[in-house]
Image 1: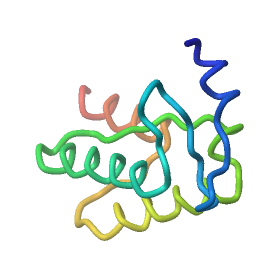
Image 2: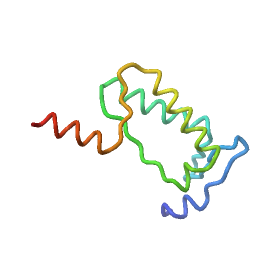
Image 3: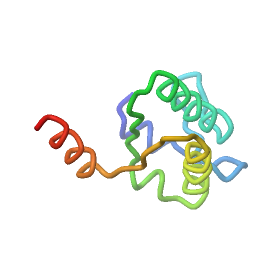
Length: 98
């Protein structure tokens, strides 16, 4: 299934959050939030840089923005987390090299 078809089949579930069918898996708000927070936990545990790519046409819906807000609230509870834009990360590594 192409990415376009996958997103065309995405629907707002009864929870108000994105539910998309990916084969036999359904992503509802609880499973998606759990997947995102577990991914962050793994990156944080090993001191890695956690990044995510969000498609505006998907994340921009009210329920999905609320889910993103919950993720950011979760992440912000951890010490030494840096919320940075791409240009800030670039500047950091450029300065670190030189």
